Length: 197
Figure 1 (tube, rainbow, N blue to C red):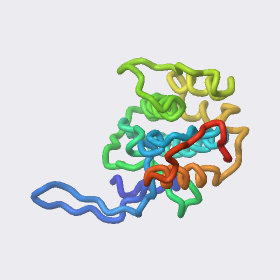
Figure 2 (cartoon, one colour):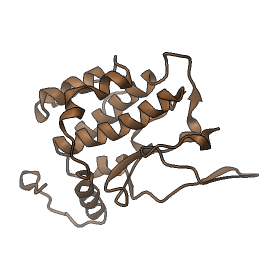
Figure 3 (cartoon, rainbow, N blue to C red):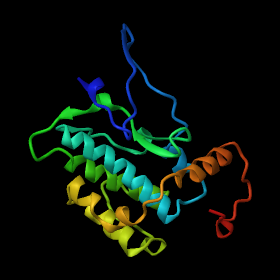
């Protein structure tokens, strides 16, 4: 049933194999996860954050429209690919479960907020807490959108001006490239004030 879910913001499942060790899934190669981006010294700029949020939100909205909830969206299972011009895709689709009518999407909207908060802050929050320690780094629209993830449906979030105003596609390519170089020691003396992108 899960293999029938097809959307540009979900990592497709090509094959599923079962063995004595468990189930194995074959899917396309993705370059990087948000977990690695969070380990990079560079913060995303506002258009990158908006594009990332919009891409995850589109995946969540699709799942909700089909009556599914992922319920395990986190930085490890949001993947980005240079092949998709930096597009973000949600993986671990096998974790999805059918939702009661009207409930689909709300759990995943809250998870989107937690993912965004981790990308915006880059450091860990105390377990169970929600909010920014440095809201001054971001616009009022970004902060308002973040708070709305805790109470809104995916449909309402998609109409928010933070994701609607930044229509640029492909801004995540630079973030992926920077993170890959930084992961291999390319930026020992990184100066945040000298950001080029």
